[in-house]
Image (cartoon, rainbow, N blue to C red; front, side, top):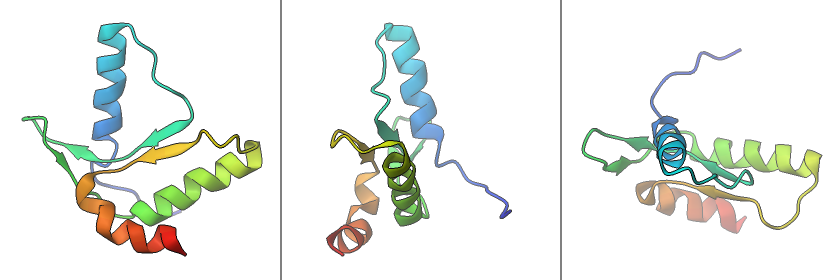
Length: 86
């Protein structure tokens, strides 16, 4: 198994903490990836296409409902647009 590193889960962790503090549940059909710094700025992360593909592979195995989605950093969007068009 390939060793994983980086902080691409930090945005998701922030969302979980904010959700717990606000006592508001997060939708379980949405995946989140991204890096967030101490100032609250969201930064791009690597491997976004693989993360999207992996999430939707799992969704297909469990049964797509049309409600699934992925939240990614805005800086990752240009590279991902080409992938999503295929």
